[in-house]
Image (cartoon, rainbow over all chains, first blue to last red; front, side, top):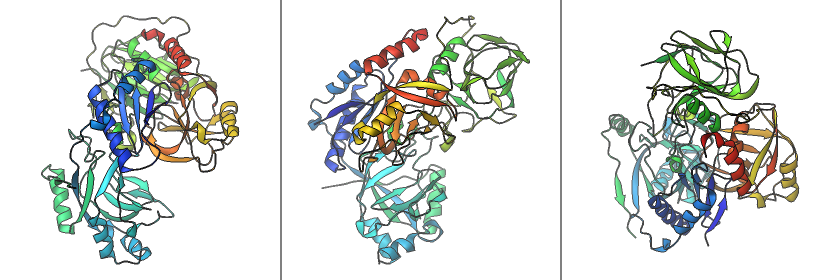
Length: 240
Length: 308
């Protein structure tokens, strides 16, 4: 059951469910595709999240009755909306050392070796449920619970862009330098957010992330290639 | 091209337009003017498109010199605008000559002034907007607030601007105590009735931990039902009022994060965003609930000067 809830007089929430699940995520993405294609007059932004979509509009352009009518019209036939085949974005990560100061801690608390943490982290394929919080930040699902680690008691004041961390059952990448409390296990040379680019964001909701380990030498080479726009991010189809 | 020389930047002055839309789904905040009504008014008086880039000055205004004859308008907070040291009018079309100096004597009311220049401000368009998003150093003037000595390029004016007078009653009164109209939010049901009563009857004051991202308020604790404070992270819109576990409401403004994980008790209506944006630490507000239809009437009356 899809519900429509006003968020003030400049947005509507389209609620697709009340929990986090891949099924609800698919419904959200199908609805977003329909909404995008509808190009509703007055709509200024569409923010999909785990279980709902916020549709922002300019009330000086379109009234709420008109907007709700246009939104409801998009609901018809969403079951048959075709989504692009899922693909995995391969994300290079240098693990441990100065790049991942908490790798040993994550290993210790889970009674595994640092090498096993890396193996486990690289074996999962994580779904990008949504983006939010800061530009380019992905809410990922699918991390192996064997490396789950609570947040740090004292957040760090400054975490560099590209830092890869673990917080509870989640893993994630910091897109811009910011403070934060995640356990840092590595760093990617990729840029998740580059405002000067034609496509400023590396990920979209519905992408999958596959981490793979690189050496310091490879890490530095990729940094150079990324900054001169010569690095091609590997994307592969996910089957099954 | 004409430009202005920033002799003194004021307390916190940034380039802002109507906002950066279309990338919210990637976590990119909208930014743009905190007070969209005053931005639009300034642009109308300066003969610009409604969403052209202006300077948004905060609490203490800048001192700027003009390198060319330029049509200007100042709206929003009354910071005591002066041209060459002589008092100038707010909310009207001003004609400045080459070498003239625009300065401000001090804040009399409100919090944010908008200075529009005919032709707008010519900074690069980043992701569809000229607005400054400070946290990621995106847009505006080199991604930052203005500093003394900056030279800001202006755009090309559309042509001669007619001096315009505004009808009486168009400009809201920016008082230190306001009634702010809200619409009940998607998670109002996650609060105890007692909590909802506090929210709708008690007075909330603006704390000094308020900025372009949001207004953190202090006042009677708004009590959640057990486990009611945290929600599955979801979208935030302009004026969303979220209440974290401590029971103190936060009104989300221009630089708000796109998603958040606290219960959304209500939303400030669009017509009243101008009132909130003009409040400063120590000011107080009382929330009053309205329907969507009432909000629409209030919006029509606020935006009447623009023919909405």
